Image (cartoon, rainbow over all chains, first blue to last red; front, top):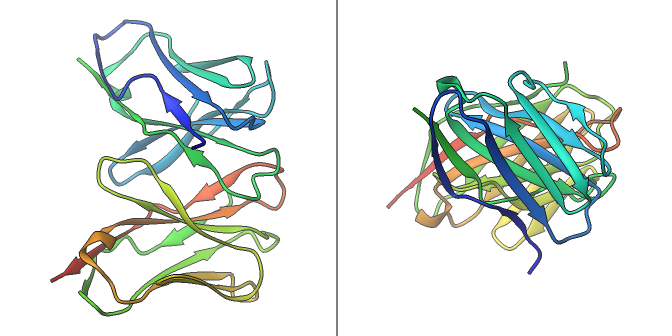
Length: 113
Length: 112
């Protein structure tokens, strides 16, 4: 069964900490995406990557960075976590043209205290 | 700014009835359309994709596409309590090789 795996289901971090969220896919997909989802705001794109070491900003990149050193792995980094980054974080991947849609990971619910 | 619009609901439908979910989009050149189901606390799951005008059926689900009206819908026949979820309409951008725009979702509740 093909998968997008996010390393943590629940995470609690303190304000100011550097936080790493990891995502691994086994489908040999070219594209990978990071979203956050908040009640009433829907899915908001943070960053995406269409190739190793390539990245593009999404709609809300402030306070975040990403790393893609290998095709199967895409990491989201919160440089200095703040309480307004408490959210559900979703990783997704797709083929190069996304014509078959995205496959999502199970999500990481991050709480910053 | 490309947009995908859905009624947020909640849409309440009796068990066994047909649930009808609607979506409009702004990117006239879009060619690929998707419906995702998301249970509370879970991640979105792709349930239907449609690429041509008309209807596409898969079990109890039918996706309908009208590109001239920029309108996509999802029909769920014989609705079951397990269909209670949020349904996200998603449209692939014409100008981007890879980006998909998501609507904010319609919350569907099937009442026994």
